[in-house]
Every structure is written in structure tokens, then in C-alpha cells.
Length: 257
Image (cartoon, rainbow, N blue to C red; front, side, top):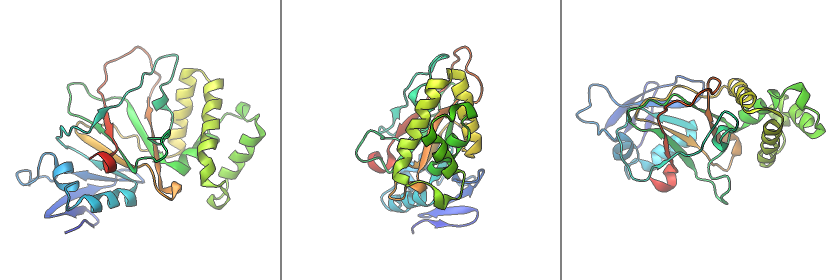
């Protein structure tokens, strides 16, 4: 049996998973309660990504754009550590909104970011939001003092109107890159982080706290760019003294699982 989306559950094979929607977009799948003896600890691989269900599950991600699987116990070898260093004076590249594989000719279809079970909790958020919302929010959050560039001002005006007036989606990467370079040049590190927190809020980003064993699978590439998601490492408060923090792993699930 392929997946069947209902109001409160999704069915893969013979197993019904409870679902809920804690945010305005995305779908959260919970490991069934009360049937744990019948559900593999690694239900992501042994059920959702099993050969019989894999296509339907990837289609669910494409439909929802963000699917979160909670309480997954997994040691699958295809995960690799999320890297990147942040400091009080410099943002990591991961702190800017991006698609994965941006330097590759073909971007991965799905990006999965995972918080493994570990001794130290993950207290830095990962913000995820639809690509069009990111561009609109980045332009809207710019301080007036930054709008000295006529091209950026004109682009901001176009994104503040109806979506039918947006520039061609194939230009959005260039627009985003220009705004990112602008704020990097004009703002110090903590002001830049505060700017992106404003962007998160304006874009209604998914920034729920990480839980151990949680995987977030997002649509990273699609023929329709307006359906794709971007993500970033998102400090929720000013970065002060370094503190211990749990690590994340990632992979390109459609290509690597």
C-alpha cells in the first residue's frame, strides 16, 4: 500500500503514523505510540524509505516541502557531519539562507538535516522557509539606510507587491546574493544575525527547537523554484561566549539514502 494522507495520520505499508502540523507549513511524523514493538526504531529507513514506500515518501516531501520525522534511532552510514564555524566577529556561511549544492550543476532533490541522539542538546535553531518568502523578507528587512542601490530598491518594490509582479524566479539567486553581500558589508556580525532573525520572523520560518533523533527533510530542488525551501543556522539570541552545543548531520536523501 502506498502512502495515504489523512487528517491525523499517514499510512505506509501496514503502519499508520500520527501526524500533526505545528507550523503554517510542513508536516511532522511521530513514531507510533503503543505499537513500538511492531515499528522499527529506525522507521525512517526500514519503513518510509524502504523500497516499497520510497517513491511515495519522496512524493510526500515534494508535496509538503518539509517533512519532520521525530524519534528516529538511526546509525545509517550515509550521514555526514554538518560543518562550519561561527564566531563573535564572523558568520559562518551556513548562517545565510541557502539551497544545498548551490555550486553544483544539479542541486539535490531533498536535503535531510538530522539531530542524532547525543549527550549534549542542540540549542542552535535551523530556520527553514520557502524560497519566495526568503527573498521577500530579506528585502523587507533591509534598513532604509541600505536602500541606496536603485536596483535593490526597485526589486524590493516588486517583491512587496503581488506575487504576479515578482521578477523571474531564475533571477532570485542573483537578487539574494546581492542582498546578502550588502548586509555582510554594512553590518557587524551581531547586527547581521539580528537582521536575519527579523528575516526569519517576516518569512514565518520553521525554527522549532531540535529534538534528539529528529530528521528534517526539505524540498531543495524542483522544476518550480517557488516550491523549494531554503535553510540556515539561526542563532536565536546574540552569540556571546562559546558554549557546548550538540551537532547535526546531513545528507541528500534522494541521492544518498
